[in-house]
Structure formats: C-alpha cells, structure tokens
Image 1 (cartoon, rainbow, N blue to C red):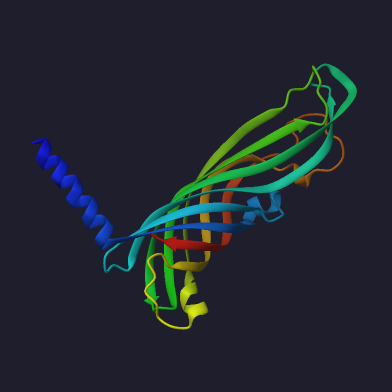
Image 2: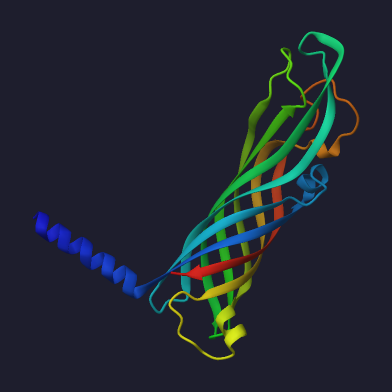
Length: 231
C-alpha cells in the first residue's frame, strides 16, 4: 500500500509540473477609497502585494491568491495625557494607519499572444485595518501601541493586461524556461462595514485616542503594476 501511495505522489507531482503553469509576482498598489470611506480617507493608500497563480494546461483560466499591505496615513501629533491622569501634559506620538488584505482570485485570459495577454479577474477576500503608535520619548504614563481595528469582507471585479518582456527586448518569439512579464491591473472592490483609524484627517493636539476613529463600508478602486515570473 505504501509503495502505491509513493507512486501516486510521484505521478501527481510530475503531472502537475508538466501540465500546469505557476506564476509568482510582486505588485506596487495604489488605492482610491470610494463613498464614505473616501470621505474619511481622502488620500490614496499605497502599498505592496505578492501574488501566485496556477494555470492548468491549455486553459484560459488561472486561480490563485494575493497578500499585501498598504498605508494610508502617517502623522506626528501632540497627545495630551489626560486619560492617563496627567491633564496639561503632552507627548509627541507618531502614528501609522494601515491595512492588510488577502484575496482569492480567478483570472480568465480573454486574448493571448506571444507578446500580450488581456484578462478579466474576479476576487473575494478581506481587509484588516491596524495602527501603530510610538512616542518620541519614553514615558511611564503612555505605552506604545499596535492595535487591530476591524475587518471588511470584500468582493472585486477587474481586468488588465500582461506584457511578455522577452518579446519586447528580443523582438522575436523565444521559448524561455522562466519568462518574465509586466502586469497592469485595475479592479473595483466592494466590502462590508469595518472600523478603522485615520489620523491624517485630524490637525492639532488631541486629548483622547478615540480621535480619528471611523466606521463605514469599505469600497475602493485598486490600481496595480507588477512583475511576474512563470515557474
């Protein structure tokens, strides 16, 4: 029985390597918050993400996932230690407001050629918001903090194109073992309600850490440029 299982694993591994394609890539991301989320986060979050795609042999469909992080606010402000029992005393605090995102995605190649591939994409996943706060100098009253706020579950639809860089630079159809491509993607993502912070919208000194807290539906546009290698 053990021998048959080992044989099956070898056959499946060889078949997967021979009859499927794997693509790994790195993206630079920029987001445009929409609706109430856009009013609360007026600047454009920017970040990085990694993705992986699996394509069965002779199929126009690909399946995979992506994972990334983006920052949408970074501000240094004076925080009054009233809640810590020292009203009238201030410390300087540096705060970064960010989110993590994880998506499962499916891609369909609408058009394919040696040079360019046009594709559509659907995805589903989540955005998790978090903040880090660091005081400029140590104090017994205030403790640095890393805090998660809320999670929005989202779905998205979009599309883009992939450019085979070997075709661009070599000017002819070459069979390369690990071709590299340049990818441009855009999508609209619609999510559920989540809590988050944005200290970038505030000004002046603050007397309480509840300042800058928001809650809304998380909708956004996402634009990406990335580099991918086929394994």
